[in-house]
Amino acid sequence: MAPPLPLVALRGAAVTFGGRPLFEGVDLALGRGDKACLVGRNGTGKSTLMKVLAGTMQLDGGERFLQPGARIAYLSQEPDFGAFATVRDFVAAGLPERESDQAYRVEAVMDHLSVPADRLPANLSGGEARRAALAQALVGEPDVLLLDEPTNHLDLPTIEWLEGELSAWRGGLLLISHDRAFLNRLAQRTVWLDRGTLRETGRPFSAFEAWRDEVFALEAEAAHKLDRKIEAELKWMYGGGISARRTRNMGRVRKLQQMRIDRSERIRGGQQVRLAIAEAESSGRMVIEAEGISKAFEGPAGRRPIVTGFTTRILRGDRVGIIGPNGAGKTTLLRILTGELAPDAGTLRLGANLEPVYFDQKRMNLDPDMTIQETLVPGGGDIVTFGGKPVHVASYMKDFLFEPRMKDQPVRSLSGGERNRLLLARLFARPSNLMILDEPTNDLDMDTLDLLEEVLGDYEGTLLLVSHDRDFLDRLVTSVIAVEGDGEVMEYPGGYSDYLVQRPARTAPEPARQKRAEPPPAAPAKQRRKLAFKEQRELDELPGRMEALGTEIARLNATLSDAGLYGRDPAGFAKATERLAKAQAELAAAEDRWLELEALREELGGS
Image 1 (tube, helix red, strand yellow):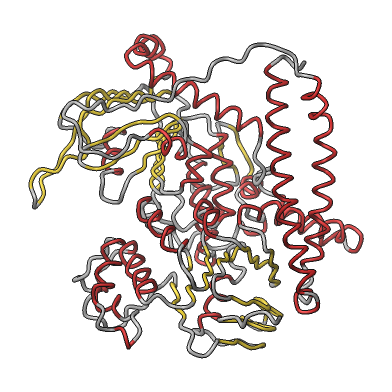
Image 2 (spheres, rainbow, N blue to C red):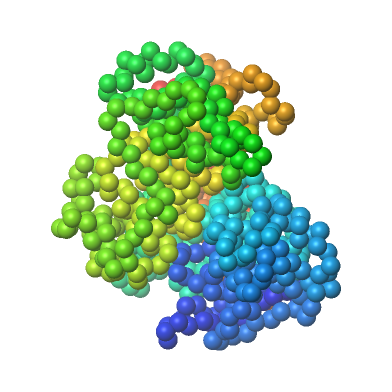
């Protein structure tokens, strides 16, 4: 039986800029029920490809097909509000003409996204404009949704609501996003735009990094045989900069887990830790101590509490995430904890010799006329002081994914992703022992997120992080402070996933409610013993099995990379895709089991 007709498709698509191809020979189809993500480095043409699919940009070669009667909604990174008198009018324009009288749908989606309905579109902030454009895309329930960075400037409750809406979406869906947790939940198919070529796999986004590394390994092998110069370029593009930044370092994972255990013990211990803090205070071990702090603001509806009776103690090296809905008071709490804003009640003590730095893209403007080197070394010369040590600016630039030849390039010529990396490079060049990051992941591409995670993972100071990126929080923080609204603020040991497990059911607040969450009881200590014979044998056999699965996965990927396979042999394509998914799951299970057994072996002293 012939495959169903796609809703929208490209065949042999090509777009050129300045006489050079951005991409060419691109084949892509999106059908009903498809949920795909489009990934790739900044500047590769992802947004351009989405515009071509949406029909807002013409091809320089190839053709675009749209099924007759099919409707497409496209969320651009730069929405055009035209001459709409109100935001409500703008959102209502997303309804099909035959359904223009269904105003209740407009009100419902604006309410979910907290869109100011009666405002003039020109007066919206960047975040408000983004939410309004998303509301317009969703309200008409189109056949195809093309969403370019839909979670930017959304808070966690709204992101979770959007995930629910898109999970139930019956039409075609194509996403560009830096939010890994968002893509892990939604993307069942991955499309990768890389150096002008489109690759595709039937695997979900969660398998992307393994697939990408397999492709790079095959390319590096071919490059070694054919052209050593190409091999060197591949190493720079995808292996350079901070070493192995895309691979989870087991030592760092163990360190984070131990830090979370230590933080959990201090939260559980409550008052008992105060003597230790006092004893170590002269050495700068105590960073922030807040005791029973409260803050409220007067508003149109009366006095509005932001935080009520909250207590926390943050020591050197802690990494604390701050989460909550937009408007709940995350930034206000951050300002209180750093001494920028005084609490109405309670006490705040800051440690000695603190050297804070603050990351907020609105506050860290770059001079477009300065070069990269001048930005990193504003006093002149070519030496950056990093971690108290002198580093040549060219070497420092490599760590932030800039080629040394770019040092004299003006800031104005950089892409958005490159400017974000330059902001981070400038931030980390400043001596500090306390880093305050307020929504640092907004508008960052995945390469820069990997870079930021790597650098923060090695940071020896204390970190306060406001973020809506759940995966980022899970990989970095030792505890989470949740600003729930109405003055309720509670702290939970662990990352965001731990918070979801520990948080109490949402009920009416109790008058004397304790403001600290009790961590889950510690697991009983394992009895010391040697690995059982079967466990040791399994541990010995797992590396060979993982290697065999990796080889099989690489072979299947090579087979599926043939763009014409589906047309020649649909059954073979389906069989290979199914086996690939199973092999990937088997490899993941084998790796998890190896880590479990290896950790147990180390715990028993290497027995």
